[in-house]
Image (tube, rainbow, N blue to C red; front, side):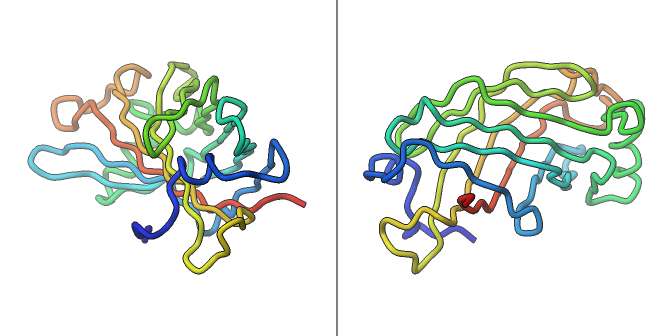
Length: 188
């Protein structure tokens, strides 16, 4: 759980750094991509495993940051057993034909104590621009200048119909809320 005493993105990006761009590798075991959508008065929640992530952060110039992520759609899980099957089926994510979901940033800009990460999200072979809100945290107890281990929290919303994932529209909401928590370590 992230606590307020952790540093937010703005504080990290305002701090002096010894190198302009730092490449990070994902800790996939400690990272999650979660989602939720409306199911009548209830929620369907679930996760999709992170397959890979390439992140480069520039603490001096946020515009130089880049993010590329791939998710394994075949491993998607949902809070209701039948929902997981439907999620991976041909009417929603169509995991058999499109086993991978990707996001590649096209721009990053400061947004208060966070950053807006805009990029191309591809689901079911359909690519659309999406903006995610990003916050960056250091682990509790780490030294002030230690950016070797970080947690990135990305949040956003997409409409599944924009990607052709229209199955069960009479029962399941169109808006899907995304919550990504990625634990990353500096390479090298």
